[in-house]
Image (cartoon, rainbow, N blue to C red):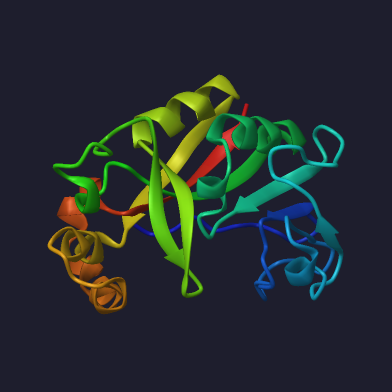
Length: 198
């Protein structure tokens, strides 16, 4: 599937959960928001805020980008409600999250659960995230008037290798095989989607 073209020229864009990373294709006036000022503060037009309580007026942005598993560190319901609130009608939402539908969770109590906690490693330290089923996220998006235009799974091979007990570092190297595994994208570890607010 060819990924969506993101028109940003002259648009008001929110990079929600930017970390310290600025995408060079984003317009200069992009608002870069992260929970941690130490990360966002390095970027232009930086704001420190929580994704579950955004400090912006309703219908402020033409495009909202929330990638890098930011959603997995929040309540999906509260975060999507806020992302939708600040998005203009007709606006574009790009959303990425880690899913419980993944091959990594087959045969576990997390498999396809609407929401499940997951212990993980982040920058070499133990951490905890929430993983969400695709159907759960789709229901929330629909509730907040976001219609999915495109959706793509990735980290397919690495998810299966993690389930088989391979280390995260070694499994990550298998990501290049994903182009050959599109037929198994329902077992992908990560989902990225593009949706429009009605």
